[in-house]
Length: 108
Image (cartoon, rainbow, N blue to C red):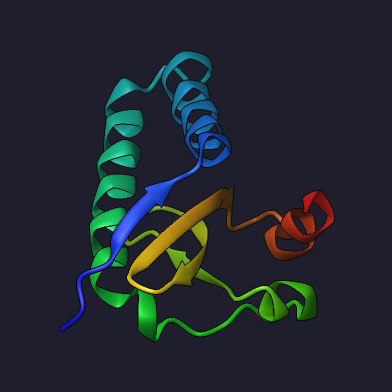
């Protein structure tokens, strides 16, 4: 079994921080914010073992660039990532209610 090194981009970290901060400080729910952060960490760990077996994104541009989406286990978020050799790069984190593939493709 291949173990992938996972690198999370500054943009993806900022997106996660924005979501966690919103839940913690705007919705005033620090327990949910901590749960979301723990789920992100668990998803990152999962990515380190399944990166090579993820289904490509549906968006043609993202598929062409080798992007995949991995959904969080307990929360409605997804990591958009690409694999290069034995390294998985997380380039974005989005809420599932967003049209995240089109949104991410337009940001590239």
